[in-house]
Image: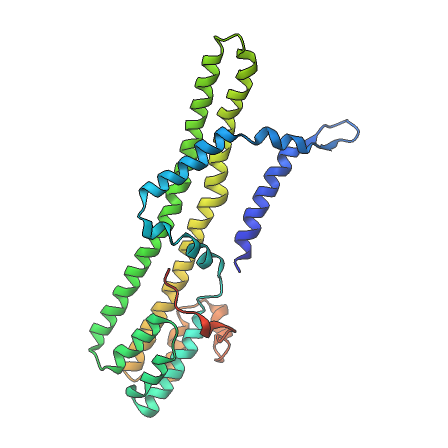
Length: 287
């Protein structure tokens, strides 16, 4: 579970609410008072329609339905921090290298069928079928590039939303100001002026909250998950090519560990520590 995302979002919302309801008056008794009623000053139906409604519909107009329907999957990927474990793949590749040295590449077909990760399975089958090494590498690297491009399209949707929300916050501000100016000529102008001015300011606040508390962190987290998946796939490519060329399993482990930082290398150097609980149940990382 991606606890930092949850803590960050919940913390930002909580601090915002506290800033709204807490009043500090130096020299008063007590100096700190809490007025929950202040929250209603920041609830405005017109602002919700303008900012949230318009942001949703503009994003829907900007991206195909195939991207929009994957939003629940995006959240699942973003919140799962244990899906891509390089040490797991390194251990699996070393095991495959040992099997290949003893029984030949054809013996890896059974191991390939045991894999739940479609990319890993494809990589193994490519060398089992005795394809040219250059062609194998080209196919796998093209797969990585295309998958990463799809992931970037998903992150771009939230980037787009984070830019649209403040823009419609400004639109709401203009709507509120226009209504306020028009009401100044009316007899009831004093009564409606405050409501119009409130809409003008609250929409800007809503737009900033949506952009910086919700949409931007989602885009950043999706790119982080993509980086983790690309790293694991690069390890698979290098490992598979080394197995095809018949490299020593011990040398292969040391070679693949260079993709990781020093602390992770020390944890994975003994072998077996990368096999985390539940990893075998993952069905690949593509969204």
